[in-house]
Length: 167
Image (cartoon, rainbow, N blue to C red):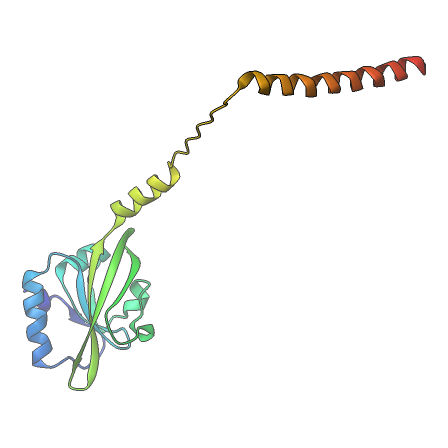
């Protein structure tokens, strides 16, 4: 069974039978990476999909924050959501707290958002700006430009004449 794949690496307190039952139910129904850890971030259980996402076997007592950029020690009580990179893919992690026998545990589920983030980046990079200019009376505009140009031409001519006369 999936929950038997987690092998002890350190001596940790395993949660009560109530949590073990919840783990078994979750393991049989979850098709997304999921795990349970204690308040200090030690992994108590994870499903097969999490093993596949991480790309290695996870052991009971392994540290969550040594593996991915999540640490339950900074989370407040209540549901917590943040992004993390696991195995080169971007996941949204939803952490739900659970208290059993006076101890707080976190049940984490991970949703792969790699493709969504790539689409967001592509959309942001490819945003198109469109400008539409309407000129009401083009003849007046051209006349103004010609007057400006005429003044500039006269100034250049005067500068050149003064230079030539000075030689």
